[in-house]
Image (cartoon, rainbow, N blue to C red):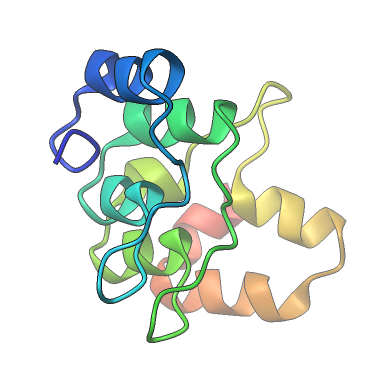
Length: 114
């Protein structure tokens, strides 16, 4: 609930002070990061990643948090930049991940071209 509703302080408290498992899953194998990404909670997503959440965790449909962000058209999560100013599209292109770039372009070409 804290992740999907954008409660960064509660997420920090639960993980850092009370030892909540970052990779705890729901019945459909979604983690807190899945919920944060799906609900467009960029600050919570960044917090969970900084705390060590797995961005590649897959739910029972094989979807990662990024898939859910894309599915819900949560641009903030998709266009977030790292400390170097790179988006996930930039990183995918630099790593030669053509399939990822193509998938992102299917969602929003302008986002990838930025």
